[in-house]
Amino acid sequence: MSPLDRYRAKRDPDKTPEPIPPEDSAANKRRSSRAPRTARTEEPRFVIQEHHARSLHWDFRLERDDVLVSWAVPKGLPADRGVNHLAVHVEDHPLEYGSFSGRIPDHEYGAGTVTIWDSGTYECTEWNDRSIKVILHGSRVDSRYGLFHTDGENWMIHRIDPAPAGWEPLPELVRPMLATAASDLPENDQDWAYEFKWDGVRAVVYVDGGRARALSRTDRDVSVSYPELRGLGEALGSLQVILDGEIVALDADGRPSFEALQPRMNTAEPGRVRRLAESVPVTYMIFDIMYLDGHSALQVPYGERRKLLEGLELAGPHWATPPSEKGGGKAVLEAARTAGLEGVVAKRTDSAYRPGVRDPSWRKLKNFRTQSVVIGGWAGGQGRLRGDLGALLCGIPGPDGLSYVGRVGTGFDAAERSELRCQLARLERQTSPFAAPLPRAELLGVTWAEPEIVGEVRFAEWTRTGRLRQPAWRGRRPDQRPQEVVVEP
Image (cartoon, rainbow, N blue to C red; front, side):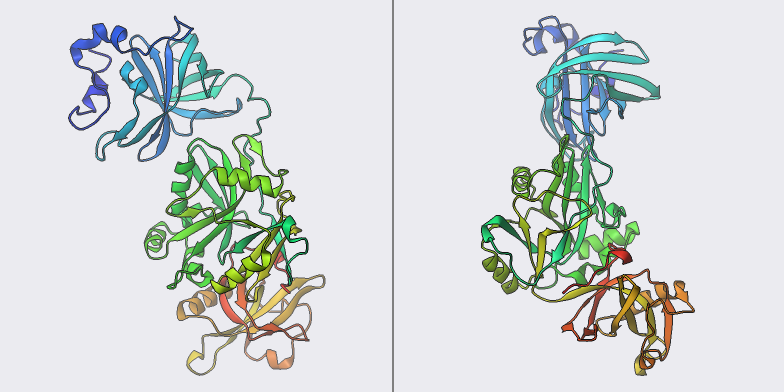
């Protein structure tokens, strides 16, 4: 039996551009197909191919006994010797495959795009049925690696040498830096850069081995809710990256809309997510980078971080890198107002990234007023809403506890009223969660609730008594914790 019989059986030479040598060519294969030797004239060759198939992976191939012994490595070669990556042993490939790149047609075995990620020669220090150790000499990889057999077709691959000098592991968690509210543009305009403020939800995206994982401000994994981000991971390939940005949905006029995003924010059931992804697609607006390929960017000044981010050229069907303008804050704010956008964020060009901190080196200026609130109870409706939710009692945490800031009774649709009523019923309590007693007129028909739900309202202004004037409900904020809510001036 020829070592390439399994390879040939999976491929039709009339349908795929992959090299498929005829069965009688084995005797001439080594002499005719091998790429020219380098200065290491006696060393065999290796190739690592990036394969964008049904799921992104890397094909690791070692020349041995006139074939390429091959493994599919879903997350690529690890840079940290303390980490093992799965490597699935697949059929031997012909030596000609070492120079193959191209598109394997749809419906064929391995359909997708193949590119050469790295290639070169290697030294073998151990090779048996359970363990293989090699020293790779390529343009991107020049170090020792080992493979060990686990079960069936599964092996694990690990780096034997220490990580490259200066390399830092990808952090498990980097919380987003937060902006302080401001009513005026900063002085020293040229020391600041200006971005549009997007009316969506914050998400930090971690990309490792071509897989994207999105975390909300509350450290909740929301990857299932936004499957559009999978393509971003594949686009970045082998790069390890942590990105900061905002997930937005567009309204009928093509403007970012928090209300339009509501069904996506509050859904994780896979079937419903798939349907909503078609009717309410989202875009990830990327505005910062915290880690890139083995190096933290947290202490890198904002202006230089933007250059790193823009160098990635991240633009795709569901992700974009919106512009950042140095200086000209007045014009940027006016452009945001004309476009109907929420506002702008001003960032000092020399500022570091401070995870989880609300810092004055980032300032947000709004074109319309919004406020996050914590729900402390609800009042029944009147008239056609009798027996249903009529209004929410809103508060903002302060040094003395939850301060009452008023009721909101408009901005709901029937589905939102029903969902909120169900959630609040599970949080019902007998006493008020607010720090001070409410006016007697506010107590009629009230049911108290544990202050765990965060929502957002749009309002006209603050009254002299600290109440929201003309508030309208915009939606729930599962991406915020109650203790994070602060007064927006």
